[in-house]
Image (cartoon, rainbow, N blue to C red; front, top):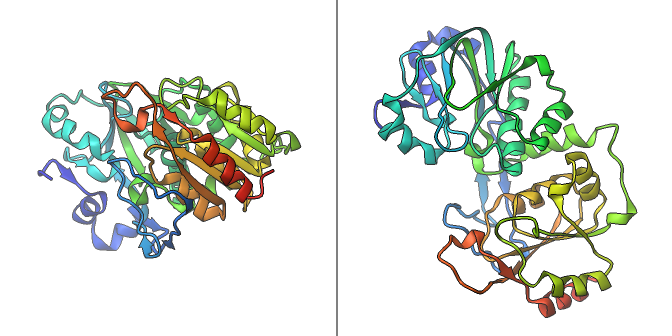
Length: 366
């Protein structure tokens, strides 16, 4: 890192008398450890950005924390999606508050193009982060930060969020109980300087998928009075037929098998978040390609059987399975023709239907 970057705690310790640090910096979940177990089925093939879990070994998560920075500022770049940068009064970028793939852009381009900041007289609690149009990252990495702000006890006048353009964003913010009059939507290109910038650490940076975030979201959303269970969704297949990539190319053949087994096909984009929660919390068996919709397994009951279809996969969903005691199974699929030069994770896939049929029989799913 060059001298334009600094870790939040390092800056706090340099800028704050030692006797006052406890007033501006608080740590939580400092001793979180877990020992992951390898799911049943095929060996995982990880996407190239994943640091694979070390199954059977103790894994220690990074600490979670909240900092209060007087005259700190928050800037949403107008390039890319969710390129959010938190800055200190002496113009250093807090690199632990930024998605790591956005560091280089800041260093090479953005540092000389930051617009002047508009002052805000009050305390801004920052929730906005990268990937906010992705359902999984929105839940885990944006809304997960809200829990840390609650724990911190710091007074928050406004919660900084990206522009709430998607239905699931608006619905989940309301479900969490964040008052509409306390939301400040930060549009691309906007730079705000706060009287006090309240910065929760990013769950993703503590370990891709952390247990406390899943427990917070699960507790917050399952307690909803509108939550209901249904026997109509005990066996579901999550289709990506409405997606632009990672579709199951032989889905019609797959559904011939699954219909005989009593599975119901669901298309998540047509559902509200509450409907998705109701379905996943009712399910006993879920078959799904790898994708953000699998974030909903955080609402499943312990023991729910998950069969994940993949060509290559990330690791967050099997981690959820471990935290909640789900019966997780990996089924490796082949890449569909015609083979393209696109990244493997977005290529369409072909399910070995005969192999899946044998798996279902072995698992007692008649």
